[in-house]
Image (cartoon, rainbow, N blue to C red):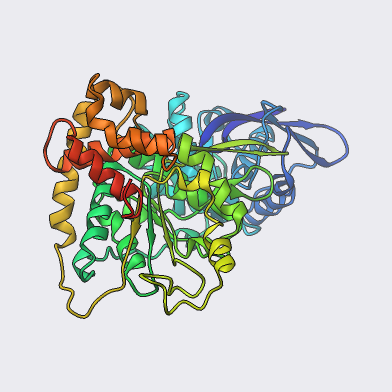
Length: 505
């Protein structure tokens, strides 16, 4: 006897439909699970058997073989439990086989038969609907997330008995308390106001340019200058995510287990600020089997902020070079390869030296010269070369006054972003930070006088060719904020100053 249904296997954000087949043979009782399951999925045999008997259903005393097809695709996690259970019940004739085969089943089973929420429901349901299977059974704790997918017909269930009854089983459905998804109960972040920052006109302007063009930013200054305050206010300047980005960002957070379905799709750019003791795996992604998204992917279409950047290990800082260039992380593990989007804005904050007092003439600094070089040397040249804006943030003064608030600056940022969307509407680029230098040069025309300052900096060796391209990107953003169709030579010079921490070209 054979029972069939479907589940979904996630590899990164890509969902693959899996046929779950349960074959019951008249032989000595046994339960075998095949089809490349990982350790947590192999344990489904014990969870399913206990859940079936706890639900008041008879466990078939036959040799049961459950196959997860395609067998070459790695399957991980506990979301296959429900599919394995209903396929087995269908093979035993305890539920209607045709009804079970018409639905996709996702969910983890408790030993008492209750359904527990699982990660990655949003991309799983989206993959199921895209494959032409719109009817999906999910735990009640995942129902709100599953219903975010257009076209999905979602059946929310609290227990295996409830699902079996839906498929025609003669079973009493007990009243059980649904299991809530405590992993997704993430505290709502209050967006701070830029008006809280006193003074720092140049740094505030650099933050506005970074928001308008999607540029990476480095701020160097003494402790208490306001670097962290400025960085935490960057997400408030960014426009809302469009529909496609919102779905993609929400899918990443669903797989990571940091999504609160009660708030709907993630519409605001995320903000990630890992501690400097974070490991490379926590930043780029990791874990047993197929890796899960790290802070870099959770910051997709938002901001990744590394405070006290030189305190991070070199291994962490160097892992950021790939996503800074490509906007994607490809994580290769023995269990397979997972790809996660990681197009974020990197914001680094650093003290000028270990004691933090090497500002101005540096008379109060107690660090030896080699300590200063070693400290800031952790930010390697190849990494810094990818940072568009590099600013000095001086110490705050008592006479500093409050500047504009977030709403006022965000209006200018939105106007600049709109100009860039219009300019690059026929391409895949959205912001100036994504555009190759050759395209920007072509837009300027053959007149080299506009970039004469850049040419001199490159000839002197103070600026690389990649750095020159990034200065040009910033110059276009400066022009967009001023409402000009193309940058002037003054805009290029201004962008060069913003690139070189105010030390000139």
